[in-house]
Length: 407
Ligand code: FAD
Image (cartoon, rainbow, N blue to C red; front, side, top):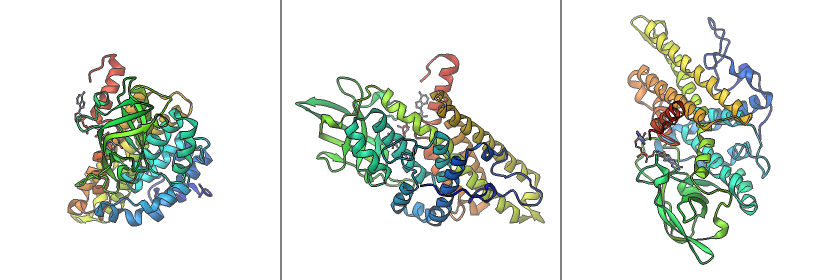
């Protein structure tokens, strides 16, 4: 669980305010940190230290080897980062801003690690907590909080993830059981999951089922050849007459509202996460452009370079303010899904553009994983696609503005 807070200026991985000619933290120009509570600062610092000490030393190799760093799960759990917003069931009961900061700091390390925590917390523990029976909660939530059980979330199907209502996976009642058939695609944590929250059509509407690893007829092969999120597990799920007892159904929800409410939780965290990716890229670029001499002076002395760096700071600052406002609205119980859509769209686009621009400013070296931008850039290609593509979020906002659904 979180430990003692450090001085604000000594946050690992954050910009320093002590450099000559600068009075502001380049990675926090609007002093968002001063808006945080003591507990939120404590959480951010603790996760930042974990990322600096345990993630950054290994993550490049994990990405290159296409390997999820499973050895970090027990420490992530010990820090209280799994299901951190849930009260009880051995969870930390932190507020939404703290959850956002967790996502931001983890994604400063790698989007793959943040994806693991997002799925476990927002897409598996959240629906079990919100829609599960007491027996389901007791069985899964404490074990998942301790990292002893891992979950995945099966909604997307191969024929069109943006249109979940078109899903073909279905479950039929047979005696006292359900029989599940179909498949899911692009499922984070799929091969390592002990339990999958699977959404399927039934005669009574869309329902969520808890499908356990090893059940006859259930297979979860890994998807190979990924050029993005290589430090994360992505799988397909296949269900061939999987027989499930009634106790496997999430009793508290029927219809698309179930999976969509989970997505709102996860998208909220994703609105924060890419701020960390962008900060990691800008931080490296500030150091690089300060030392790279071309045409007689460091790159930082060139107006065009300064414009590009300033533009990154503008976009990061905007994203930070948006994320914090979103978090405060969520904690006040006033969050609207359209606000989450706009923030996810803006903040992921911001980070992807910054990562690409940083990659370019590193010249040839920018294509090497020795620098962080190309890894973040490749990861963010997934982040801008999953949890609703950019177009899907634009259409959500468009619908809010016009009252017309243009999907
Ligand atoms: P499609 O829906 O086929 O979209 C293709 C293109 O069409 C996109 O550009 C899209 O923006 C555009 N488009 C769609 N609808 C419209 C429209 N009405 N008008 C105009 N353009 C439109 N899913 C899960 O359920 N669980 C997971 O854990 C999970 N993890 C993932 C991990 C990774 C690494 C990736 C890449 C994906 C993951 N996904 C997961 C799936 C992800 O949510 C889907 O890929 C995403 O929703 C898009 O669906 P799709 O890939 O089928 O693309």
